[in-house]
Image (cartoon, rainbow, N blue to C red; front, side):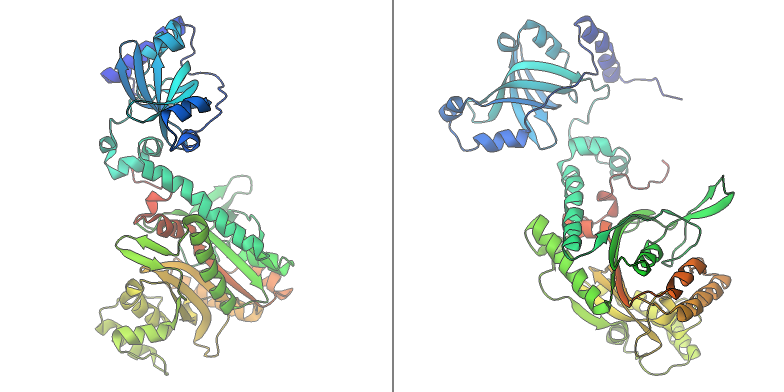
Length: 494
């Protein structure tokens, strides 16, 4: 049921609707041919004197939201905000005419209007539109917060993002920065010979990553489907089909917790290169971040909180075993029985889950507990245990695989493999994942027989990588919460 209880301000605005109609004006407007943006106008006359601007005789037509009004009887100043920024306008009854000024008298903060006129400079030196035409376009029935301080509750900012974008220039900056970063990354991939594709969001199989899924039901088929947790397996099938360099910017869904770095619905880019390997993915990840930073921000030295992240220097390359030894003094490099590894973990306060049945699980737990948070500057951590990497090619030491993850400021930004293309080995990995699921690992992969069949047709040796787009935007926009870079993040009920 709609709440019909209005504040005094809301009721006053509704009462004006009839007055607009009496004046022959639709309170919710018609098409308006906007010719200029505020920033464009300012750029055209910036630095000119009043006399030069008058001689320039720049006539403009703008549309935007009224953010400030200073009424002075038969003349007023308003501040109009559009997609590019704000500009002042002068509205005088002697210029726009009595009827238009009567319509203007009904204006409130937040209303959307159109103005046409000549650009001038006020006595105080402010670039201003001297309005010759005033057109009401849309009545705002709810008042805006008087200042941004009126919308200080962070949760309310996210719930009412449309208001946040109106009054908060920083939120608007981030919203417009995000597509520019994605476009820059797409441009880099395209110029490197990769093809962008789209694959299905609904999947009958849980695969491509270790994560808890969202489950939905298809009525016509009377069958459950998962919202995809990764785009990996269909992209590999495309490599089998001959698309040798392929990538997808895709929305993924994981039924997990929410915090400053996690949202159940998020965006990644996954990319696969036939005839490549982990070294190719290392070069690509480092290069695309550097390219996007320079193209969009003009620098590789990025402030993030109280730190400066250096994307210009070569990223560190270090194995997981080396990092664990650095932080704990424990060397897992030689042969070690599981019970000994388990005892070392318990001595250090690491909880052992039922499905953690190999030494690799213990090594990964040590890394998570003691190493990850300290990886501030860009670092590739390579050589992951085989137990936690079901889709990755084995390295020369069969206990480990050709895999790295990229960490910046203690946060994972990317995950890359030399891809497993042996269907027999892959089937054994899937069977191990099914056993882990039986032992209680809700994130374990299921058996994807169609993917195994595809591999049997032959997938070329390949490198692959997935990178978290939201976290890349956080870095480049200098934001500490993922909710600042997602326009409509998932929210708990009030």
